[in-house]
Image 1 (cartoon, rainbow, N blue to C red):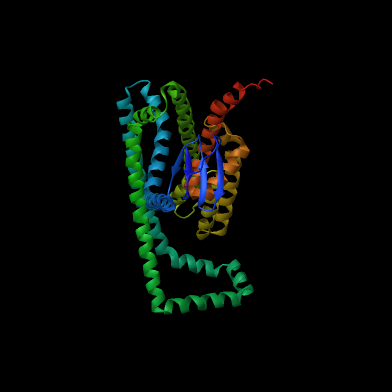
Image 2 (cartoon, rainbow, N blue to C red):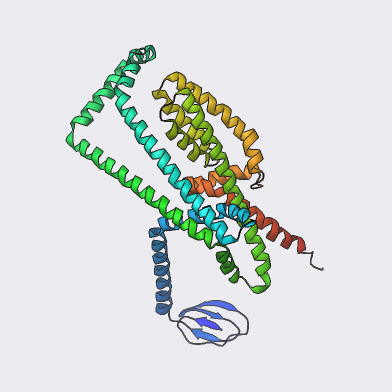
Length: 382
């Protein structure tokens, strides 16, 4: 087959050749010539580029929905080991129903337990804010700080007063508050959507795996199904392990912060729990945030809180995490760091969260697909 742009057909030999001529370029394949006009070729290529751009724009518009689907599927795989454990005693529909009811009750319990406490503690903080500010301004360390940096404080206070006296700035503050409210409402909506999708995915996970296996040729389905089960099992074990670590951190933080008298201990415990879900930097970030918030109580409370989290991070790194995560995913330490940093750079918090199970899945695929294929190859005869 020969593709020729313009010009007369010339006899060619039976080899494949690309040649330039005054009328264009000809390609000969197996002695057959086919003519494609440059305009048609360019039009088809342009249409292909336009379709690709359209698909990219659609994916960009659906980015939020795709994130919801990915997070829900990730959580469904994480809850699947619990369903399988209950399935040993009960049928799968009953196991799924039990897990669904427990998840809904836990979610509702967290909301009902945290929100009233947060509202009450925020109200108390607003009520006690004048006295807290007065106590801080009367403290010796504040007087020493203001005496050393008096000019800086005066300029900062004057800048704040000037900003507040401008009506246009008050409008911007109001718009920012509305944006914050809209963001909170959007976050609640997103959590609800993810929860509903998680329940649907968890109920139909086996059928989804069977449908995925249908796309693979019949002679490779058994191997593909085994590989899919290994990958989904690794993701599930990782989610269970990470949530266990986060739950330990949240409960211990609630107990400790309540004892030392930190402000809003329920909120700080929730920050510690959410932070521990993020690999590597999550626990440290939560510790820094909670220590800074503890400054509202006293510098001593903040110092004690910081010391507690430093001790806890050592316990988590050398005792808790090896015992829990070693049973979840077998990923080398260097790969964990690289995966978490790369995932965070590409997808932020969610990217860092899913990076390690993706790395574990990649290791499973390499060990069970690539390495056996390479080991089966022998040196070609000379």
